[in-house]
Amino acid sequence: MNAHASAIALLQSRSLPGLIQQQLERMILDGELPPGSQLTEIPLAARLGVSRGPVREAFRGLEEKGLVRVEKNRGVFVRTIAPDEADAIYEVRLALEELIVRKLAAVPDAVRAAGLEKLLAEAEKFAKKANFAACHECNVAFHDRLVCLTGNPALIDSYRRLVGELSLFRHQAHASIPDASSLRASVADHRAILAALCAGERAMAARLLRRHVEASRKRLQRLLKNQ
Amino acid sequence: MNAHASAIALLQSRSLPGLIQQQLERMILDGELPPGSQLTEIPLAARLGVSRGPVREAFRGLEEKGLVRVEKNRGVFVRTIAPDEADAIYEVRLALEELIVRKLAAVPDAVRAAGLEKLLAEAEKFAKKANFAACHECNVAFHDRLVCLTGNPALIDSYRRLVGELSLFRHQAHASIPDASSLRASVADHRAILAALCAGERAMAARLLRRHVEASRKRLQRLLKNQ
DNA sequence: CCGTTACAGATTGTTGACAATCTGCAATCT
DNA sequence: AGATTGCAGATTGTCAACAATCTGTAACGG
Image 1 (cartoon, rainbow over the protein chains, first blue to last red):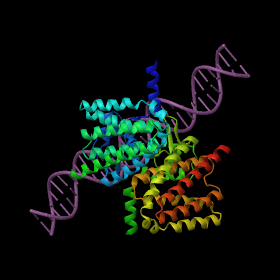
Image 2 (cartoon, rainbow over the protein chains, first blue to last red; image 1 turned 45 degrees about the vertical axis):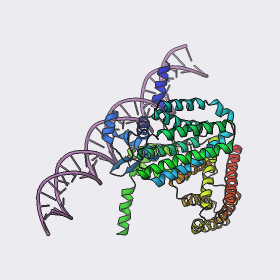
Image 3 (cartoon, rainbow over the protein chains, first blue to last red; image 1 turned 30 degrees about the horizontal axis):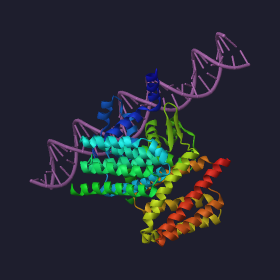
């Protein structure tokens, strides 16, 4: 009965275009559909076993979300992001991250109760095992957990959108997963940030986070220049 | 020929769903379609002289933009925003505004060259003439011009989205246009902020802006409690 | 009299078909 | 040979029809 209830809830909550959009979004963010590649309606609809209508509706949602670019009478393409744009996105992200730590440093108990150390421990485990994809996933999840802890829906939405676009840029730079040393540095940064937050040291947490984000930005920009 | 060229450009650039979305967006932000009201496909399609398909696509875009809420098999409704949510939105907006002034205070020449005084003078003129709708429009335009001056597309997008949602909340509170004294206070605030920006006084501009946004937030929250 | 159920109208969800547009290739002309 | 034109195939844009779902109403039974 529990399974039934959840199935019913799934059918009621998400419409078909919504599910298609979610699926495509995952594929784009995972890099299965690389930036610049075209999404053609007919093969996609056939592969998903639906008609073109719902697929087109999903496209509109993805466009508004900034993940695809629609060219009239030509087709829809996974969005490409110029280095300047990526820089601009990083700038906004930094402002939001500062808001996040400002809010979280005010509620250290909530941060401690969130069990973020476990996530970091997992990241370290993956790094040791050289499972860099999983490690990177943990690192992304860390930031997402932080923003979710703020409980501010507008902040969560805005932040996730930016992170998604940056993920796109990372794929475009053919660096879907950062290299091992970058990953380890990130995990260490996260540990320091978490410690500062749990101690309620707002200024320290903000400084660490700024350095953390800036380092990530520079790494990616340098990578793109070389390539 | 120039007219022809622009007509062609219009047809090429914007698709039919895009135009419908733009039109609906305007109507929602102008308060013609109040929060909570339903958008039914058939009458809308009939009124615009198109079929339901493009209208549905426009709905998806509006949903992703946070302007409507889609309930499966029930319909789409102009989004309503709870006071808590509005507060949360204000919080993010403030963080973005701080980024805006930080950036603009670094380029006072560009700010001076933007001709914002003219906009403020117009706002004052409208206030004197008791044309409060036009005055409010100028005030909104002032903020929009500021964010555009940053030249950061991600910042512009994020900011506009928040402002749109706040506009929705204002309509919902039956305060589509602030009262006369609020408007005049806003114009005065804008003058002070502009002066600080032109002088490159970053800290002063940030302080003024924070007070300005906070005042606006409190005004709206109080209004909603009374009503 | 109140709650339940069956039904009719209306609205949304999805589909397949048709029209308009684009793309690549081959034939033609200079 | 190189550029231009015309055409066939493929893809997108739009539409109208059909199926599924919801809403309000009226009949029915307790």
